[in-house]
Image: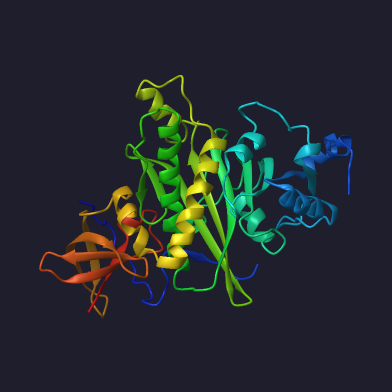
Length: 369
């Protein structure tokens, strides 16, 4: 049972679920891609690679036209993977582009890769260049130093953490807040898929509503989705951080495998992200054609909250008195909030208080007819 220690403020009933919407924001020799010492200190390196000749052609156009920009206007050095010094590098600290591409089996998502050894934020790259990148493009970094979380929280992003952001587009704004749930589900399924294919035990990675991933009671990942609206479409940038081989600041997936006696077998970032896109593309199509209801049962098997008892504090209309009510989480409402029931059978919708660090320590109740 969770206890709320401070009284949350009421949120607007028409405010969407916790999904951040933002205002609209030829051939070169290999040695030309190598940064000088001055460039390495001031320029962000972006390496482009495609799954097929089609995406490789798009990558060449992006480089030739100097199309990719950072939000702060800082310099960018763009290379093609075939020209880059990192091509063929099997160093575990460097994202292995070839391994990722070989494991990818999608027709749309993840096929154009923007990779950087060190980057402020993968999310900023895809969001700022949404119109230049083909839909489904992904940006991956080995390290990011301005990673973003919910409510402007900073996500620590050390080596060993899988850090990536990609683009989605939708027309129906009513389903946009549910995208983060599809992303969360695809990631938990991807982890299990890779473990199963490699003869490892399944890791019980669970979803904490609305956008966190937990393992053994500790946070190991998070999802951030932002959107802009342009030309009657919602441009969505989805960002994911997952602790795979970094035991700090909490724990990681490989540490859990070691505790289970599988120290020799390690999960790799490239396998996880490829499996993620392979899963997400399937879930994305189901989501668009059948709605989130078609994925709900699988989602509920993965999340932490079925039957969870929560104490919700409510203020009266004059806001001079606070009452507490115990409710039981039943699932999700069609709009993506928590569906709950009081002990006397009253059905209600739970809204998070935007000021609370933990969503479950800032819930307000709205009665449903």
